[in-house]
Amino acid sequence: MKLHQLRYIREVARCNLNVTDAADILHTSQPGVSKQIRLLEDELGVPIFSRTGKRLVDITEPGHAVIQVAERILQEVENLKKIGTEYSNEVVGTLAIATTHTQARYVLPETIKEFTERYPDVSLHIHQGNNKQVIEMAENGEVDFALATEGAGGARENLTVLPCYDWNRCLLTLSDHPLLQLQLQRPLTIKDIADYPIVTYDFVMAQDSPEQRAFRKANIIPNVVLTALDADVIKTYVELALGVGLLPRIAFEPHRDIYLRMLDVGHLFEKSTSYLAIRKGAYLRGFMYEFIERFAPHLTREVVSKAINAGEAI
Image (cartoon, rainbow, N blue to C red; front, side, top):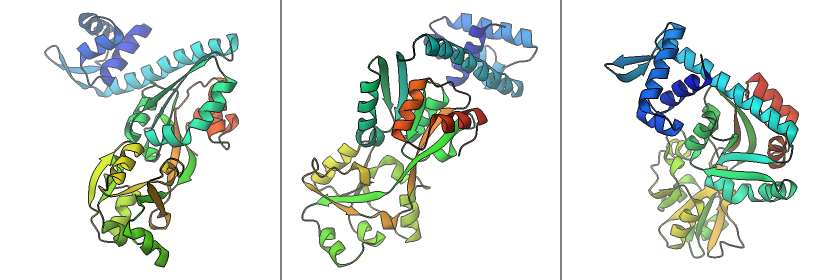
């Protein structure tokens, strides 16, 4: 049994059983991958994949167990490498983070500024995506950890998920919008918002989102005319009078959004939570723990390390 055989079966599983795609990612040949998988199956005495002719069509029951063990072995190999790097040079390395646009644009800048000043020789890589994508990056080991805007509570079994902070929503309008006058007379309602076209994030359309739950509770179907991943895109279309913008409150910057006005509608929606997601058993270097604690002071090295090793969310 060889490490590269474990890498092959893991990558084939990740590529939805497409051996050619896995071979391209692994920088090797498709026949070479297929041969090594066969050799591993012969050594273990069980089939890892089901086949129709030469084509892989499914992962067998023992195959799922083998791939899970392979994932753990390969992660421990990476941990060994990180330990060596940690003790040979504690201030040089790479930190890869997956996060949403909202986090990258409005929440992380101060933390990143402080961190890069403290660790100028650490190469920092920010990978952006929607909530589902950033969680998958953490799960697949593509990044050291992920910061998800929300929706990470149902993450996969091999992830440790830790709450960072709570947040709620605001409504952005043009300066002459009728809702501005209305909110001076009384608190806004869900119906008040639904009387106008809405521009918001794509994840708001999910059936289990706090926004959708609030509209369903009021027996109202919102008129969502445009969705986007990027808060700045949403603001642009609000400025063009396409609709009112429903966004996290942290996305409003009065000194920059000079053509917009903000209405706090947090009383209409459940609070949401932003999460840190890390693979269970991952080895984090000292500067990684420090980045996390700068971002969320309650997530100290002791707290995060205990959670990762226990494999339990707190």
